[in-house]
Each structure stands twice: as C-alpha cells, then as structure tokens.
Image (cartoon, rainbow, N blue to C red; front, side, top):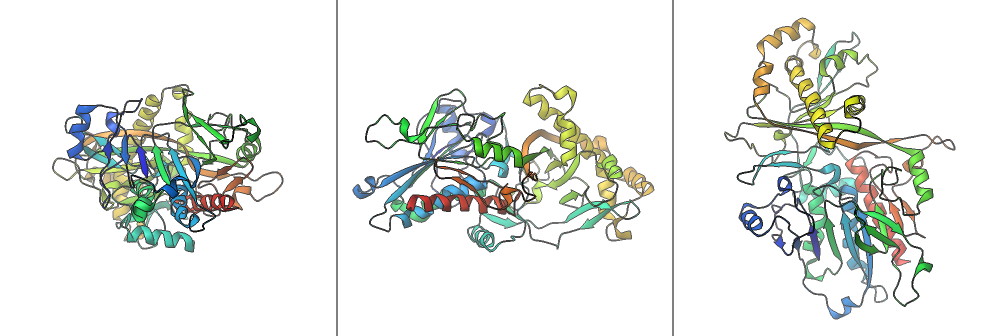
Length: 521
C-alpha cells in the first residue's frame, strides 16, 4: 500500500491509477502548490481546501501476511536518497519473506518539510488563479544528471530511461571563462557529455521511485509507504529499558512536528539531510546522537546557493540553452563578476524535454538562474536581510539576480554568437556594438511575466579535513549506521561521488542494504 499525504503530488505519471481524496488534513493546503488533474481540481476545491490524497495499491493482506513481523521505518527527506531508501526496502520486502523463518515487512513513512516531494530535485509550478492550472514550470534545484561514473548508477539510470522517467536534454551548452590574456571567452560543451533530466519534471524521478514498487509488485506487496509533505519531523530516541514492561516491543524513535504533536513511533530512523544534526536544527536535538552530531558538524559544511526563476512572454535573443560561468580556472575572476554579477548558471528551462511553452501564444520561455557560492554568501549577508522574513530574502535574491541577468544578456549574445570565430573572445568594443544591436533591457524587462527567488541553505556539501586525518570520514563510506540506536544517516555528502544525483542514489541504496542486513541478522 502506498499512502501519500501531499500538498504537491501530481496525477500525470503514466500507468498509475489516479489519487483519490479520502479525508482532510489538519493544515490547509497552499493553493499555489496544488498540482492536480483538471478533472479533479474543481471537485477538490468545492469539497475542501484541505485534502488527503491516498493511493492504494492493495486493499487487504492475507491472514499469513497480517502476522508477519512489521518493521516501522521513518525517513526524513524525500529527495533522491530518501526515495531510493524507500524503494529499495519495498523491493526487498518480498525477498525477505521468501524464507519461512523470515517474513518481515516494512511500514515506511517519508517526512518532507517542503510542499512537494523531491528535495533538491524539486520542480516549482506556478498556478493560474483563475484556471487553477500550471502556467509556468521551473526545475529550480538539480539541473541535470551527468554521465554515470559507477556501474551501479549506470544500471539505475538505464532503468529510469527504459521506464521513461528521464530523457536526454539536447541543446546548445557552454562554459564562460577567461583565456591567458584574461579575456572572457565562451566554449561550447554540447558534445562533451550526456545530460538527462526528469520527465516531464525533475521531481518525477522521486515520485516514480516511491510509486513504482507498488505497481511492479501488485496486490502481493504487503509493505506500506506513506509520504507526508509540508511537515518538519523532530526525533526523540528512547532506550529499550524505558519500555513499560509489557510484551509489546518498544519502538526506538518518536517523531513529532514543530507543534510537538505526535507523528508516530518507529523502529528505525533514517536521516537524509546533512544539516539535520546542526545545532540550529530541531531534527535530532533530542535524539541523543552526540557522536554522530559531533562528527557531522566537525567534518561537514554546506555551500549556500541562490536561485531565481523567471518567465518571459517571448523568447530571449540567446542562442544557447545553458551556460555555466567558471570562476575557478586560475584566472582573475573580477572581469567576469563585473559583467555577470551573481550568476553562476543560466538555463532555458523550457528547452528541456516535456516542458510546455505555457504562455498564451506558446512562445514564452522559462529561465532558471543560479548563483555562484561567493555571490550567495554576499547576498545573504546583506545587512538589510539580517533577521528579515523569508519573503524579504526571496525578493532580494530575485531583484539582484534578475538585474544581473538582464544586464548580462548583451554580453551573452555577443560571446555565444562569436564562439565559432576568434575562439569566442569578446572585447569591450564588440560588447558595446552588440549591446546596441540586441534587444533593449527595457524591452526584456517588460516581457517578464513572473519572477521569484529561492534560497538553498544547503545546496552542496563541503568536506573539511579533520585534525586526526586528512581524509574526511564521509568520503570513505556511503552511509553511517548506529545499529544500537537503529539509526542510519545517508545523503549526497557520502562517498566519492558526493554532491551529485549519483552520490545521493548510491548512499540511499547503501543505507537500505545496511538496514536489510541488520534486520536479517
């Protein structure tokens, strides 16, 4: 059975039964985050603005299954890692019951603090107030999946491709850097590696991971999965001797929300967010995880990032679909930062497969702008943003990055158009000439239909050398297990492929396999 309490779960995945409303939640659903089929939306809005969406894969268990040993697992985070853990456990549940002496089943709950499933694989959809239909769509986290570096992830990516969960992103791509004369240059990289994206959205991969096992196993699947979004879960660990003394096995973990309302008791806790043990977070503050928290805080930091999503009502005069601005090529970056400001990545999101042209005439474009780390720190450390509301922070991010993007468009046009001659070099004179010929900034600004900023407090992991060893402990393993406390930490900060979708998947799979081995033992 797969239960989903979502505020942003989609109904458009092929070969899946529609979600059915069952009962209202205690918290109201944000209208801008509702992503539902048009045939269901009107009925939902008439009935209630708070909805529980539940998908049932099997309606009943056999008598023998009801008496199988059931293991409750709580997972914090619905990104690639968390969804991989859940998918792997569900897939393994049938094999665990193949032995007559081992009939264990998993009851899994994923808690996601965001409005929708996906974590940093999230997709933002902007909903029209009148039609209640999406009019703009942005992959504002992970931009694409690079060529696999491990056999295990190559096999998994092939499965995603076969199932139609991902498709290749084909277009014109490039990198902006400097040559030895410190002139800004554009280098095309379209043929250097494959790029895959979730279809029809980046977060479709996570949705399919948690839904696919119910379809593949049919009514025989007796493990369960529930996904709860919009909920910050805080964990408290209990020692077995605290049991009341009755014959009922004591659950090791109690989860509560921010209002200290109970969410449930669990045998195992799996944490996928690298910041969960940070002092400012409540996730593990009462979890008695001192050794792991110390290790995590001493060995790991997170790189912040700012993102802005912009929708235009007509195409921009750019011949490239994505540009990465390289500030780490050992040349003075000041000239690039003077031209491009906060920008570190620029992408025409509408060029990805399955992304609709959502303007009235079908000619609009959606762009995603991401900052470089230094710019993110500079923006977020602005005096006016200290103790500011999240809304104020997002507005400032948007204003800064939109202005930088608009001002850089003439230079981007000049550099990308000259890439096939003079090695893509650009001089001030050429830039000024192109600036006069290109679409004016005023025209571009007037074509903006929607723009919104977003702050990623933990976009990428940064490993710190410890005093005892030059090798960071998180690079030596793909997950961390404390079997005594029935706790597993995992995420894209583990292993040699850290900071990537591949690293997130490998860590999630390793965490599930560790738990399965422990259960079998």
